[in-house]
Structure formats: structure tokens, C-alpha cells
Length: 451
Ligand code: ATP
Image 1 (tube, rainbow, N blue to C red):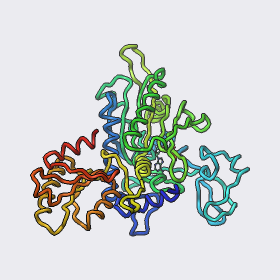
Image 2 (image 1 turned 45 degrees about the horizontal axis):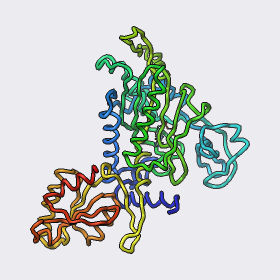
Image 3 (image 1 turned 180 degrees about the horizontal axis):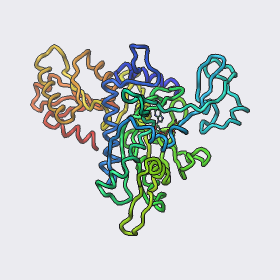
Image 4 (image 1 turned 90 degrees about the horizontal axis):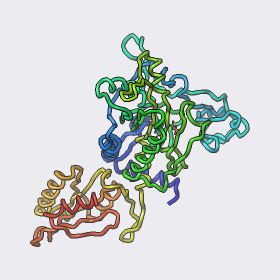
């Protein structure tokens, strides 16, 4: 399948099947925003759930928190977002579209004005080579708060500050020993110059992130540990590992305070680009927020009797880019029964629907009654189970294949008449069908889901 074609096909499937719609579509759409329909919302939820289990509850020393999406100006002054959270913006003087200048240069990373001047690109929209001045464009969204508008606040461009400003609260209430981490999942907003490539570059998205506090001398051990955990996560959530590549970010492309950054890049249909980031941020953040708030954010080590500001390793994972990488990894076309079929090879744990139950025929009340019984039994066990009696069985299979349902169960006349009361269980990936007694169905599926 041609790679550029794959994204178009995926976008179309997402719309057709109710995963993702353009944000505010009936008003003409709002660029850089996407609405998740029922299957998209369930998939998004499953991804967050598994992330939380993997990175919070399964770890010994990670505390999950949730903080507001609006924070005051002071926070963003200390974090450097008001001065430095910018992208180089350039306007085409011919068609007047604006672009992120660094994305127009080959290589992609960082922006070098000299390289820009000596390699002026053609405008991707109109092909001209007439560019305006490069300007630093700040990505933060300001918010007027209260009736007097006296306090300026911002929608958060990152979720990390919420964790740094709570460092002292956690020390004072839970008294954890280093190393420990704070984790959160939540919305971030960036006024991207040119949102594009479906869920890849949007203006509002969820982040899943940890700030792991540690002693300076231990940073490399923890960096390696979190790198491994991120690889395990990539496998667990069903992102094709062969399409993920580590990129050691060069010193000149890193934030000035970061001593090491590794980007996890994914082979998207539009090129190899960032999926996740892992950064050693030294003690920069706690020191900046301590200076800005005038609150001591140091840690007292009971054993060594030393007081110091902890250093931080930050694994940062975009939720929308996870959705995109999962969907691209799962999108498959093959031939079945002489027809091309499309299906999402999603892992059962993240599939929005775990099982679909069908009566063979819609107009036979005895079949429908039995199928409803089986549906009720499976719903109690697996939650996200669908009942479908529309169209013929072949159509129902295609529909479930396209939303990635791992198994379909059909109740037929043999189910009613034969003593073992077996149903047909059909496997999404192979199309293979097996007869399974209703009394053994739940256990059979549980084993299939967790082999
Ligand atoms: P990029 O260089 O692609 O703009 P970034 O280096 O600014 O990304 P970070 O600030 O490190 O990204 O953000 C952490 C994570 O948030 C990224 O690894 C990515 O998964 C996600 N992310 C960042 N910007 C966007 C966006 N505009 N839309 C969707 N996800 C994003």
C-alpha cells in the first residue's frame, strides 16, 4: 500500500466508522482540532487506562496527580514558556500562507537562519520563493480570567509545570524518599502555526507524562530504566516496534538545560517524525519554579543529612500521536473470500469493542433471544460488547473488522438444537471459525485475550 495513501485511507475509515471527526465540522471545522466519536473515545480511553497502569499503578514510586489546564502568568514566566515557547514563523509573500520555517528545511531539527538564507525553499502551497521575515511565534494561548481581566493566565502548553508546582505538596503530605515521580495525563494547548497530518500536529491534545525526581549522580540509571519502560509500553499498546527509532538529540538541538534527550521517532506515512521524548532536565525546573515562586523546593535527605534540589528525568508521551501510531500500525488490508478487506489489527486490550454477538437471522425470535442471552453474559464479563443484527453475516464481519473487534460470536440453529449449545467464534485476523460451547465461551475468550 502506498504510504501517502495509507493516511488518507485511515482518515476516511476513522470518519466512516465513528473514530475521529473534524472538530466543529458543521461550522466549517476548526483547524488543529478533532472530535473523537464513540469508537475513538473508547480507544483513547483504553490507551490512557493502560498507560496509567503501566506507568503509575504498576510502578512502586510513581504518584498520579491531576492539575488544572489554566495556570497563572508567573508559572509560565518561570518555566520559560512566555519567552521561549516559540516556533520560527514565516509568511509566503505570494500566497500569504504562514509556515513553521524549520519544517520547510531538510532534516527538520532546529532552525538555523544561515541555512534558511542559503537554501530558500519553495512555498509548499504556491511554489513561490518570496518569503517575509522570520518571526518568533509564541504557542501559548492567553486567557482572560475574571471580570476585571486583571489576572492573565494561560492554557497550558505542557502538563509538566502542574507537577513541578506540586512537588512540595507531595513532599509535605506523602513524605516520599528519592527517587520518586509524579505522573499525569491531561490536555495541553499549543497555538501551532500550521496544524497538519491528522492527529500528528494539533492545537489541543492530551499528554501522558512523568517527572521523575532523583539524585544527580543517579540520572543515567533512571534514564535507561525509563527508556526501557517506554519500549515496553510501545509494544504493549500495539505500536509496530520496527517503525520506531531512537534519535539521540544533538547538544545544539536540545534545550540548554538538558544534558541528554532521546526522541522516539515513528515512520508516519508523511515521514519519520517525533512520537515521544525522554529528557534529562537536570535541576532546571525545580530551581526555576523555586526562584519564581520564592518557595523552597529542595529535598532533605535523612540519611546523608544533605539538602539539595532534585534532578529530573522526564518521559513525555503524546496521546494523539499514540492514537495515530496505534491506528497506523493496526491498519491492514488483505484478501478474504475473494474480496479485499480492511481491518484494524488492534490488540484486544485496546480494541474499542472486544466481542460482537450476532443472531444468524434477524427475523427468528428464538435466535435473537439466545443471542441476547449470550450478549448479556459477555457484556457482564468484558464490558465493551456489541450486539448486531443488521445486514448479512458477511457485512457484519466487515464492519467489526474495520473497527478492530477481535472476535465475533454467531448464534445459529445448531446452537439451539444441538446438546452442546455451541456458537461460532470467528477470529478477526485469520477469519478462522471455531465452535465453542456457550458454557465455555467466557473462559475461551479470556484465554484468547490474555494468552
Ligand atoms: P514537535 O517538535 O513535533 O513540535 P515537541 O518537541 O515540541 O514536538 P514536546 O514539547 O517534547 O514536543 O511535547 C511532548 C510530546 O507531545 C511530543 O513527543 C508529542 O508526542 C506531543 N506533541 C507535541 N506537540 C504536539 C502537537 N502539536 N500535536 C500533537 N501532539 C503533540
